[in-house]
Image (cartoon, rainbow, N blue to C red; front, top):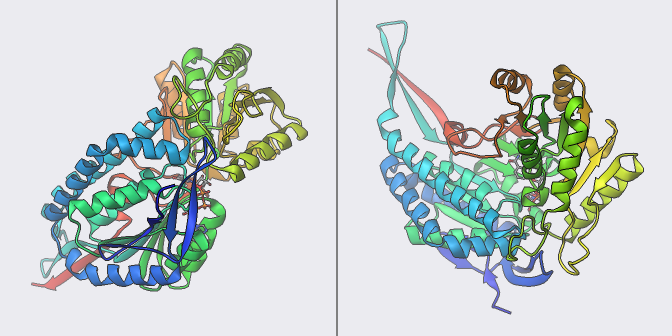
Length: 480
Ligand code: NAD
């Protein structure tokens, strides 16, 4: 067993915390590392450091910030392989998925470096006024010290989506990774330190939600909390933030649909259903866990889907030809099995999966699972499962499919499969979702926004919207 890792980085130096957390490899159930984590005092000290660094950092130019972001992207790129391995070991996801994560982090830092480079020229731009007696200019200024709180399903990725734009805006940061998956963020913090970020601009406090996340959301000196996680915790974060009228950006749960229209390419539809349901073992806020299939195709689709799903290789993330890895921990494993059990009790028909693979004695593995005939009022149909479980329903008309997809408290994403562009675009326009893919896997570009309708989100990440989330708008109006 290696030594206990320091999980607190404040004002440019690593510190031990006041408690030790075990980090588990979910594919083997073995302890991977121990991390010394912080508490409310560490949060106060991190906010002290961030507040002290803010004066200088907020005055740095976009060009200066861009140079640092490019160095961070380069540092991550140089550590691509070890970061992938770390991600797979800590999260249970296959290496090919971990590679997508690391590449996304690099792309995000590079994209926001480009945004930072263009920023100086746009600052103080004149504002047209309907009077010659006055002139006005527009400034975009950093909102202050910000708290970033992230979950375990895409460690480092959700962090990069917040961290890169926050730094470009000129904010100083206190980051709280998930206590379940702190290892990739600890490595990212080392990369940030090597890139030469001034002390105090980036601070990290590992620890539990209650010990670290809650005091961060409550600290009156924190101007904004950007949170990704469950709706239940999102509500608590918002309540705490409300006490000091903090800004909040929330990325929460989803119950998204994949619509297989009557003219769909069935092989493509099956692949997209598997990708949308089983990537990251289904632990995606954007999982298209509702699959809506046109009546005319449904029998054939289900036959092909069952064959494909039964052939999915579930294995250790480092095994040959692995397609799906482990769930994150025992709690999540039992929660998902509980949902499956309840789905059966509620009258849904289990087409395949539903149990752990017979050949895997250890690890939090569940076979990819497909239900059909899922009752509309069941938990399976309405709640986020956050595991490898697809629910398939048939529809008769396009309007019925759209109504079924939109009937949800959430509205994060959707996918449409159709050979006819006009039909697909019309359906995409009718769906209440922040991102709709047509005949495409769940590709994500930093140029396009991430976030959803209804209870899925408040605000948007990525693109210029992700940057605006960390900026204040100031107009200066002068008498001529
Ligand atoms: P979670 O809400 O349990 O935890 C998220 C983070 O909040 C963790 O760092 C946790 O330690 C912290 N936290 C817990 N209690 C807190 C409190 N009282 N105050 C402040 N912080 C607290 O979520 P999870 O189980 O880690 O992640 C799964 C959830 O995240 C799912 O619901 C999923 O849909 C959601 N998610 C959403 C998106 C998105 O972009 N919309 C992306 C990924 C995950």
